[in-house]
Each structure stands twice: as C-alpha cells, then as structure tokens.
Figure (tube, rainbow, N blue to C red):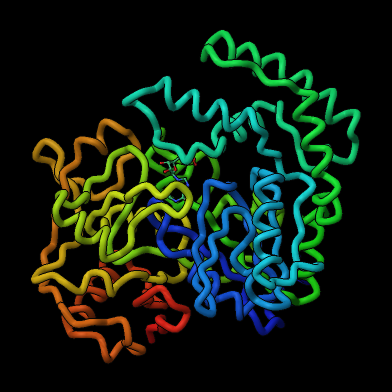
Length: 437
Ligand code: IMP
C-alpha cells in the first residue's frame, strides 16, 4: 500500500476520472478528447452501446458507442473494462469504420475477459418490455442494456471469456434460451430465439475479438504501477446511475464514481482527479421527472442552438435550466475535485438566465435531491434569476474575456456547489475550450 502511494506521488501525470454530472450528454467525449493528451490509457468502466460519444477531430465527425474516444489519439491505449456490457458485433463495426478512416488500432485496444456480452435477445427483450409498458416506458435506447445487466446480476450472463470455450458457450446459450423463449413467447407474444444460430454467429466473430481480450484489471494495475496514467471515461451520468439516479428512469449501471473501481478492477487510491462534466443548462432524453425543464418554446430554442439531439437514437433532448440542487448532489456522490462546464456559448441569447437553487413541494422548500420518484415529480423549481448576455462566446479563450454577466453566472454556480469550475467549453471544436484559473 505504502509502495503504491509512493509510486503515485512520483508520477508526473495524474489519473483522471470523467463523469457526467447530469442525465448524460454533458459533452464528456470532448473533455475526454482534450484530457487524453495528459494520460497513457483511456478506459471505459460501465454502460455499453447506449452511449454515443461525438468527437469532432480534424474536421471529421466520429460517433463512438463502445470504443473509448481516446482512440483518436495516436499511440494512446484504450480499455473496455469488465463493467461494460459488450456488443461484439457492434464493436467490430466501430473498429472497421475507424480503420476505414485511417485510425491505426494495432495493439491499442484491450477488452476485459470479464465483461458481459450483450446478446441479441437482450435487445429483443428491451424493445418488448418498453412496448408493453406503453406510456409508462423508461424511454431506453433500445440497445438491450437493462436486460444484459439483469442477466449479469441474475448470474445467467455470458462473458467475453466464454468465447474461449465454444462448447461451454453453446451449451450455456441453449440453457439460457429456454427461459428467454418462455418469456418472449408466453409473456410478450413474440417468436423465440434459436440458440444454435446465435452461437454460430457469435463464435464466428469471436476470432476477431479474442486477440484483444486480456485480464484488464491486471493490465491496468501493472501499467499504473509502472507509472503510466489512466483516464476513466464514464458514460451516461450521475442522474442516470442505477443507485443514485432518478430510479426507475435510469440506466442499469453505476455511472458514478463507484463504478470506476468495480468496472475496471482498480483500487480507489489510484484516482487523483474526479471531474464532473455539466452543461451550463440541463438536458435529458427519455422519460422521467425534470424539475427545471424549460417551457416548450424556450426549450426548442436551446435545443436548436445547442444541437440537442441524441447521438445514439437521434431523439430530441428535453432542455432545462441548470439545476444546482441536482448538481450539488452529483458533486457529493462523486467527490468531484473540479467541474468541466460545457456549452456556455449556447446560453448567449437571453435577457435573463436562471439557476434552479431549490425545489418547492406543497409550500415546503427542499434543498436536497429527493430519492423518491413521486416526491421529485411533485417538485417545482425555485429560480435565482440573473442578468443574461448575448455576446458570441465561441472565440473566447480566457476567463477575463467573458462578459461580466457570464462570470457572475459562473461565480454563482461555484458558490452554490462549493466545487471549482476548472474548464470552460464554448463550442464543439477541440480548440474551443480553456482552463479557468
Ligand atoms: P438504457 O441505458 O438504454 O437502458 O436507457 C435508460 C435511460 O438512460 C433512458 O432514459 C435513456 O435515454 C438514458 N440514456 C442511456 N444512455 C444515454 C446516453 O448516453 N446519454 C443520455 N441518456 C442516456
């Protein structure tokens, strides 16, 4: 233990965690892209192809679902950790399109042998469950994420390591299919699945996956001990975390900081900086309560200005004012050491801007983010209104050049959450970002 602590102190570069502080889509991929310069390895620790990371690099737009966005940086290594549910066929598609775009993947991508596999029946069950719920649906990305994590926790999942033993893989799949087919046919009224056909297809592609498979927990520990540094890349956001989010309108993994250790197999002593990414306003896709949601007309204006459409599903995102009650809660859950504030430029259109500083419920003022769905649904926002600004911020490169109203807005955020804003992003390009002193 003491040895590790010494090694950690002797390194030049810090290990960084990037976590969404809201309901996802905060602009994490861009921050990962910028901060990848400072590390050797980028590692995904949870989620799956429900994530959609958009990065604009050298004029080309890349959308990643499973591969960490660090892959665009020459020489950097990328890890898909055990906490991810891996869609192997989707992954190969992403790899192919990167190679086509001229990205060299050789020796740069490692997949955990302990990651669970996302199978075709997970997608079927996700869609069937959502349709059956009707207006009570979660609004999932339909990628099979919930059913895949259900199988993992229910101890009936298939793992990447199972590709090593085709006989075992096929036999287990046949066993799993019995229960899935019962559910698909008798509960959802859908055709069943053919386990042998799935086994054939998956075992066929497994020869391309197998060379990338390692014990990533061992691999990361070894690299960290040698003084290399990592960036742990979160998907979704704290308010979609299965424990701390707006349950049941959440994803099925641990998107917050605890997921880093369980999803990569490294100890917390390695985590140096934990950055929360938040937009200067709030968005969410899918259903569920959203106390600071803007009225339809204003929300539409922000959606257009901010290009607020899902990278995975294309769905329009719901838009709202920055919710400081929720942000302070995310700061506490994750122990953020700094905030990366994105899309500040999008707010440059208002006479006034608002910050949600409390909730009101039946005349009572609430300062803590509620755990219960009925309570959160009944919460009305209490706003602090501030003078807005209409200057184009997209070419700003230092704090001092921001309008005084914007700086006051940033000060009000910091004062409330008691965590420093360390980076400010004012546009989608890599260059449109600067550090806040
Ligand atoms: P699932 O993760 O597909 O099961 O979806 C559960 C909830 O998480 C839904 O409200 C989705 O819209 C939301 N969600 C999942 N992935 C993302 C993401 O990458 N960004 C934003 N929302 C997401």
